[in-house]
Length: 385
Image (tube, rainbow, N blue to C red; front, side, top):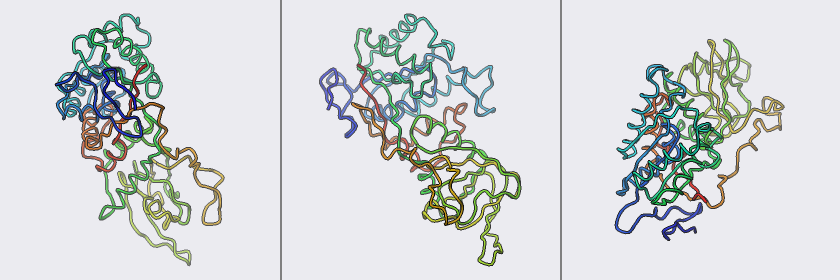
């Protein structure tokens, strides 16, 4: 157990937050202070939705307009108008989370670490003094994955909260490395469908971006790769160990079963946006069919770890086909962290992420609810020193 500054109690990672601190008689006021539009979804999307739904008041502020970010969907913005589009995306995402008060400052994206710190602290302190929050949430000192702007905003927000008259509690969003595997969540979903999943190129692109972001932030522990296969090459060989899940990004593949006499039986043909390999992962048995590139094929590949080049084919090899030791056996939780159960708001978090079309070219209903809940059901924080 840890004490909030006002004496209310929160549970650590073996429990869940009891309540955020707030003066008696009113719900908490929560400020998210970040570097870019879209930072808010991963850091506090579920938590903000949870407390706003219970009467809390939220505000989300970005110190930049995110104009130096990538454009993942050419239809969503141009380099010239990306900053203004991302401001609109932040406002839309915040509305999904239940927040109507957003603000983007015009500090140049990518420069927070090099800006005069006193100036940055004054900007952040002005935001805090104007909103008078009970809780300020930003990145931890590591910036989630070392992004210089994230690291800078963590320091700026923490110092500003300390210097502000209202002295709000300062929470750092942390991203403990998870033991969850997207390959398992996706396989469970695919095996529960009535027939073979037939996606689209847009689905394939969106899932690849989603998986990359989830892996980078530690939500999932999968090894990710993109591979090219010329026509007539094996993508999967019958009899080899199962473990990799393939999402066809482009091209056409043939699924063929090899008979005992060496002849082949055609099973199916599929293409862009579809998965192959889920049956073997679900059963834990060797592959029951070949998957062969009919045309030039590109696949997005998810697995428990990188392929082990020493592993043989068929059932004669005793070498582990994947370096699965790279996957933690349990979530690696930092000491003294605070866990917030946001399971009922996980799908809302994905809908908010879909508003950031320039960064995540996904649709709100693109993925099954089990995927959102499996990855985003808990958010973690530490109380700043």
